[in-house]
Length: 242
Image (tube, rainbow, N blue to C red; front, side, top):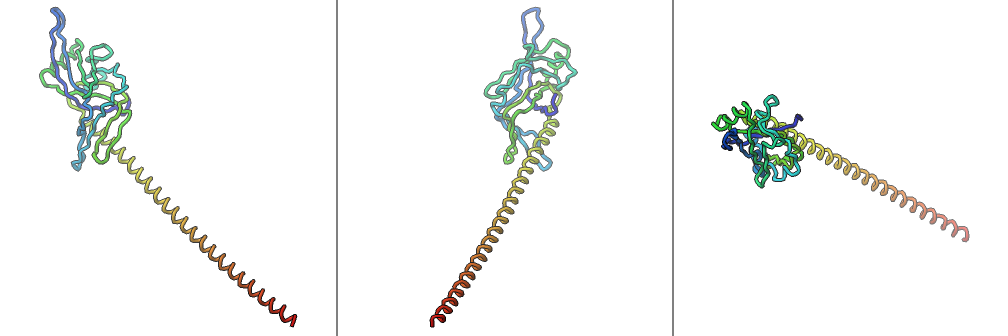
């Protein structure tokens, strides 16, 4: 699986359905894997600051849910407890989120896990996913997942993946903050460049003004000299005719 898979905790309950006589008892797990548009605290920083996450109601649009399995602790070493491919795991997207119904496989592991859920020893799940599109609001400290790339599995877990969630959230927010810092730094550098450019242009404008003023003064001197020369010539001409 990719390194950027994330995990979130969800609620879980179990039930037993009696089937026709002579058939095995059907053991069912039900829960809600995803709740839409519900800001949820995912971890608290060292200074008490809380960070949140919410899942947009269109996040599952276009996501392929045809090959999702039910696992225990996301383990690759325990046989799947149910799967969409086998028709034993139903995933239903509605206006509030993603609901799951699992008809447990007739295995020792599935029976043990179902019994632990039924008796309350296990009551949480986690789902594994990667994100296609998200954004982070620095004001509300909320990450919004706009679309999932893939849902890998839903898993019955001993403990919700809070620690993994915290690590993932910290890494995500750190990356966002670093990106924001780089953007601010880029904007500051751009502003400084524009300021320097403006100062350079102003200096060049002053230089041009000084050169134009000098040329003007030089032109006036030349005109004065020309007038003076013309006056002298006029006087010489007059003296010649006297």
